[in-house]
Amino acid sequence: MIRALIFDCFGVIVTDAFSNAYQQFGGDPVADNQFITDTVAAYNRGYISGEESVALFAERLGTTPQAWCQHVEQGEVRDQQMLAYITACRKTYKVAMLSNIGRNSLLRRFSQQELDNYFDEAVASGDIGIAKPDLRAYRIVVERLGVAPEETVMIDDSQANCEGAVAAGLQAVHYTDLPRLRERIQALADTE
Image (cartoon, rainbow, N blue to C red; front, side):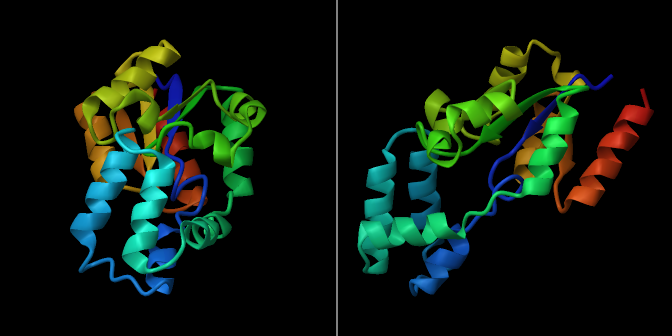
């Protein structure tokens, strides 16, 4: 029985503008993969602040922190249809967001009222010091929702994060688009 849904933020609710911005500033995501991975991981786990992360990327790309930050934020667009779906889901399920994002960064993208309207729980990896696909991240959200892992579905555009959720005992849907997500959630609900 499904009692809860956990949504990823970037790539599911909000477009992930990082890669496009990185390339537009002349960066090579393949050549810089280790730098990107290390910097993002440190930020997502709350080891460095958003300002420190922005400064590192700006320095690497030869631009100002303000220009880098502005370009990334302008590329982030909320999926209004997804937010409407989440609102509808709250009538049936407990709903959470679990995002690999730095400390207090969700509040730069959503007001507290919006987070409260859309989600029963909104968890940033930087606030808990643990990022997906670490099993503990999923377990923290499940515990906060007051449901069992097997009653919970993680929706994420990262296959590795979906695999982490399954390893933590949750069900998972690898997100590609909203129509397929609706079908998968309905299929899971119909098997109950």
